[in-house]
Length: 260
Image (cartoon, rainbow, N blue to C red; front, side, top):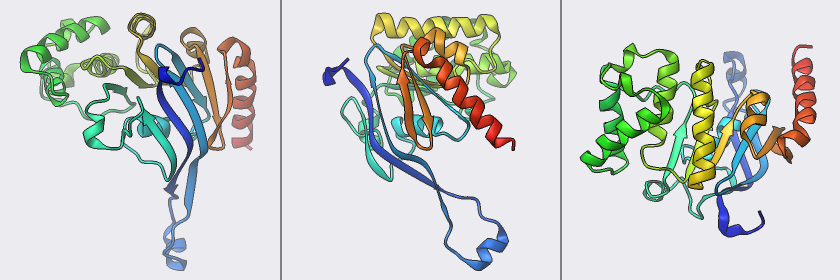
C-alpha cells in the first residue's frame, strides 16, 4: 500500500494539547494553566478499503484522532487531511462523506422516533426528503433496528441506540468510517452484525475504516492493521497476528504502572 492515491485519511506530525484541570489553590498561584500533550508528532495513514484499528491505554489519544479526522478538533501543529482536504473547514467537511460513531453520543432527539431522527440527520447531510426517508429505512435494516423505526428514541435500549448511531453514520454512504468502540453496549448477536457490516463496507464498497477499540479480540477479528498509541505517538504498526502479543504486554505494563 505505497500508492498515495489510495490514501483516505492521514495525520502527519500532529500535536494536540488540552488544558490540564487546575485546582483552586494552583489557580491562586498562577493564572497560567498547564497543557496536557495528548498527541506529540503523531503520524498515520488509512487507505481506501482498509480497516485500521487504534489501540492504547485510556488517554492515549484514540478519541482525539477520531475528532481530528471528523473536524471536531484542529491540530496545534502538523497536518490532518481526509481525501486530500482539511476536515476542519466546515465547507469542505460537508463534501467529504465521513461517517462517525462516537461513544456517549447525545445528539439524537429523544422525543422523536428513530425514523424522524434518521431522516433529520439525512437532511443535514443534504439528502433530499425522499432519499433521506429511503436511506433511513435501508440503514436501519442493515443494523437490525428497522422494527424500532417508529418508536421514540428514548424507549430504545442502550444496544439499540448504539446500532442507531451506526445506522446514522451510513446515511450518506461514507467513504471514510470513523468508529469509536463500535460494539460497546451490544449483545453478542448485535456485535457480530456490526462487525460483519464493517467488514462488508471495506471489502465490497472500498470504505476506509478507522476504529478505536480496547477489545483486542475484536481488533484481531476485524482489522487489517493495528496501531498502538503511547505517549502521543504510534509506537507499533503491524498485522494483528504479528503484533498482538506485544501490544497486550504493553497494555498490561501500563495498567500495572498506573496501579502502583
